[in-house]
Image (tube, rainbow, N blue to C red; front, side):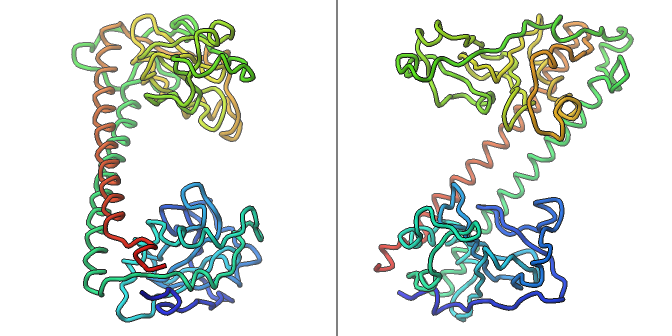
Length: 394
């Protein structure tokens, strides 16, 4: 057993007048350029005090997140040199010749450090937004390590899984990009009454018919049972809230009594759901379950094809958000959605377009599931390959 402080050295070099790529951290992901995360570099006058780090150095961000409540340690991988804020980062370099830095990166990604540090961090205590504790406890963190070759073998194994995850993620993005491009061709552009592409059997079938959504769909929103009445909750009716419109399960369930004594409304599996309020305002989904909705959700039932309307709204989502939600933040209303004008072909063409895009959705979902399975496999491997604090003889 050894200690982190015996294998590493603290980094204190400041940027000064030199120029480096300024980094921030995304918990669970790692160090990324500030310009990528925030759209610009945010150092300001504090730039000269940033800490310089080099490839394979580690930066410990002392800010708590839900996944890493004791902070997150990440390794610089993609850049030869960079800089991080001195206010919330403690930086160090693995200097022991028998220690493999990439092994430690995976160890920290598994939150080994968090299990050790949680007993030293003062609950609720923060300094300039950072967790409050003496960094000596970071350096005293115990480590039970295999020899260099085994560290390398473990890191290489996990790296190969990461490469698979990255490859499958690229496939997912390619499918999503292809679907987006296809929707632009299959639905009429702004100011047009016909799409650029039509399936061969519908060539020459005439223009699509303009219709406001309120005249094409049955539309309603719901309500929330009185939260002070316990007898309204804990029943068997799934209660769908705006963040759950695309999920197959809900956190809350209401009773028949709660449903009858509120303005909650029932939706069916396959109904079109649009989030009106909250962080996901403007999101659209096909309901995966039968359940009750609250006032933050609008339900649409098209007279012939819900899937066609869903894909159309997916295509129009960014336009609706940019037109009706100032700065991309705020709420929609049922009246706004009702007033949106769509163009509808005959039911047979609606079905053909819906089937085409739904098939792509199926491929994208399969890809997401494949990525999730790889991540679960990786998590299980990490739990089995890395030592626990107890194994480090703490």
